[in-house]
Image (cartoon, rainbow, N blue to C red; front, top):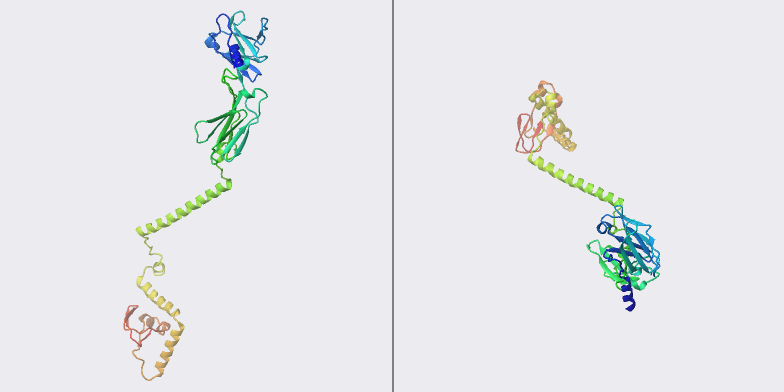
Length: 369
């Protein structure tokens, strides 16, 4: 504690002329480089100033001018130089260096900003992860390793800090993708007077112990084949649905507005062959219907009818109730073939109309045409 308090006292500014009220920012980049910055436009009212520094101790100090200025709209606002020792004295002067505007002496090792962690590794064991990194070459006791993580459903980062150089956290959902980032923090006030942390190491993405390129990769992308098959099935399903709807629509349309047949097709021969003569067309139609019916009559029935007619002729008694009908057109046209066609009609007591004649049917009737 005495050592720490001694360093803190030594780090306080030593000023001349009461000009230490200027706020400056001091950063020691891992004991390698020093960066001193100031708000030049607010402090010096657009006056360009010069910067000098020294790491020497005692009365005979060698002041070095800044060779690498940081600019703010063409005005000097900071200086970057190499660290050469633990004790640092700085001086801000006017443009030609003749007048000192600010002076400060400090311990540079109390303004260290560590480098980012190196060789970060993740070790997964079920829902627990252990993150570790390489140990720095010096001052490990002054560093702490900070781990931050969040899932894609979280808005804020969750943090866990442990001694350098390993941190352990558990309770991760294997179904979620998590983003991880780590950095090193400098302990305050044991080692630093300013709370400086390293830059974040590159962000990584993990899901159930598997490293991903991003958390968008946890949704397995469909292959081209699956996409083509899905589109084809969707198209076939749409075609099937449209076909069903079309069939039902046709049925509904037919029931609401039935189709009216065109008479020119079933009566084409009436107009083409007979020039619209209905009686002539009816006579021909009756003749054709009779001829067609005879052609398709069962041969056995015709043979049986002819046998019975032969028996009737050979007997002395005339057949019961046999009548011969002759078509007037057949006599006039000497159509002997039509007049000699015999046809056996089933027995009945009904009257059968044919070609304008009413024929009384009984049990033993033969009709001669």
